[in-house]
Image (cartoon, rainbow, N blue to C red; front, side, top):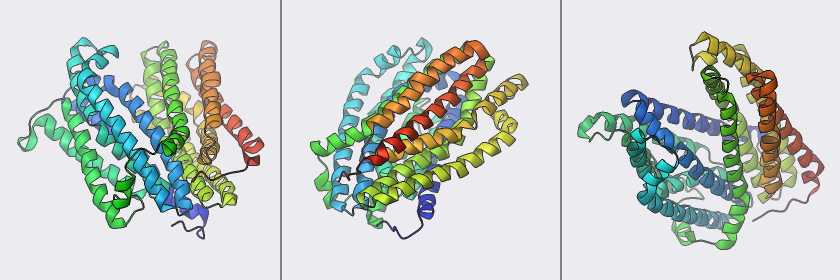
Length: 450
């Protein structure tokens, strides 16, 4: 159970470090997979799997929303020492995730080619893209379980097991993908489908590992008789899970769509601008991983405190998360300012593009700290079940500030205006979330959901 006697910052760090590493490894695994496909097969194969990315993002958005809602309830149940409720939430979430995965697998099996054609896959890669997508979609039932379990484990304070699971999955991909591309060990050559098969092999092996490991650890989420009995749809619980989780999924989708608008704006400035945009985003993604991880940690720790009816602890969680963001994200921002040229040159070599990208990075870097603070306030409020207003405020920062500012300022300041728009959006996010937190939310009576 939770040891509230230990200093909060210590518990926070123990939870946070494996979570940060998991996020970094997740990003690296996608990069390595693309390198394998692009270098060992060719650009047509890379284009084939790239066409499927929007579909994959939508599916992951749904599962992350479902799992994030369940994690809040599990965090509160863990804080309340209610093991029965943990099993019930886990059982309902896994059942719904598996059933949805089966529907997607059935749909994908029949309509993968039509889907890829609808997404505009070029004719020369349509067959490859459809074959890759079909295999991925057929694996969705198992993948949904993998994502849900590793996400919900964080609700009981376990970030080490998800890290081990991710490492195991990545190792499988590192071996199986090239083996199937080259036909090593007498295996068939599967071309672009190699990555899809390796993807499924990775999470299936992890699920076997988790079955035995969680039982060995006597984890509250271990697959035992109690969990088996809870594998059903409790519609009351499902309603609570969806209420908590749907806003997270909506926010991800809207952020993605707005990103497409920003790309369209950037593309007007030419190929060099697009290359600079890609390089800066790569650097920013790694700078922002700690802030993302801190917000997840803040949500889980606040949920556990609410479940334990230690409502005074919630305020300390907020302060600790804000301070962690200042120290960790702020430290990375300083390092990035100092070594900005080297960071950019890791992705591009053209001197003219490096100069542009470095200037853009300097414009936006500092605001990563601001963004981290804004998401921290939102995460803590979500832990109490207050999810819709923080979501609306986040979307307002994107739709009412970021996109319009990028459109208007790009006409005034050129490419720099797009990145000034980012800083304005991050600042608006903090202002809106902090105002709601201090003026409204802190005056509300916090009530545990379980």
